[in-house]
Image (cartoon, rainbow, N blue to C red; front, side):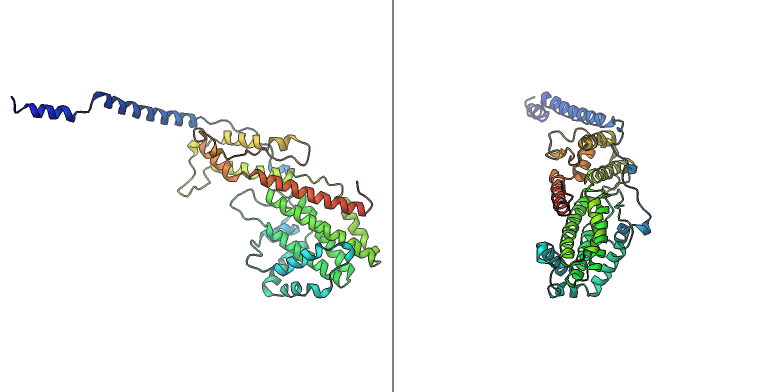
Amino acid sequence: MTGAEPVAAGSAKASPPGWRKWTVRIVVGLAVGALLSWSAINLVHADPPLPLWAGQDLPAIPAAEDNGWNDLYQHPHLFQELDVGPVERAVGASLGRAPEAGPAAPEDLTEARRSLGQPDLLEAFATCEASLSRPAFVDDCPFDFSQSCPSVDVLECRRIAAFHVLDAASRHEWAQAVARGDILLAQSLAHLSSARSVLSMQIALQSARESLVLARQLTHWLRAAGATGLLAGLERRIRAFGVDPLDLNVALAGEYIRMLSGIERITRGEVDSGGGALPGFFFDPGATTAELNRIFAPVRAAREADVIPAVADKPYTAQLGWWVRNPVGKLYLDAVTLPRRHFETLLAERAALLEERSKLLTELGQGD
């Protein structure tokens, strides 16, 4: 009997207390219950609300052969690894001159002229010339985040075109300078009214402002040279631009439609997460679209041209409990929604262009 007592004591020690078993059971039960609740919450998807904009709300797209935008779209990364520094410096210096100072001297443009004679830049310039020769320039960027659209290339092409205006002016070849300046201004303004993303609109605003500065200089130089007979066409285009409200809504609507198309692609299982399609189980397209509508509702409802989307101050994934409901939708919105500063930059660019326009119209006798 005494020999069996240590064994009984050891068996009692090996058996965990009953409260530990119940603790494990409760923890496991709570975890399973939480997982089931989380799954149930994400299993119910809201019906998608009606979209704020659709593709037909944007400007009509001309035939590809008539659209200068398409020339640049067919040549992605046109200026990648090309040195356009001499041209940019020459254009920047010339646009920074007071109109009364007159055009730059031909010798001041020698370096830029020589750089444009390099074979690789000649090829890029030929594409830019083809784009400028078309009767229209309408943004036709696909509503697909995987597509690369011309952006900086547009600005580089127009700066090369501006250089040729300045080069002609430096030699007092006024007819050529005005003809090229008119084409450049027309294309810049067409882009401005059709830009369908924030980036495209920023490029369009900057390009149009530089084109207006150049037009202002040309009007001074032509009057000083006594060549006012060449001014009529350029002045008509400038005055027509004076009635344009510079509405940003086309660009913001395009931004919205692009984000909406991404929601639709995730819903159809077309977006690869790296290991297959994104899990639709934790993605609520209706709730995601409703939040997208909330962000862009101020733009859709307002009549002013300077209302921007109600972008949250911090990412959805920085908010407490973001993962409880529609986590994939919140991750998506965080990935594609531009920070508020980009929209504020857009307003600043618009204000700078309006100021330049006001100066030019005042000088033409049609200011406010």
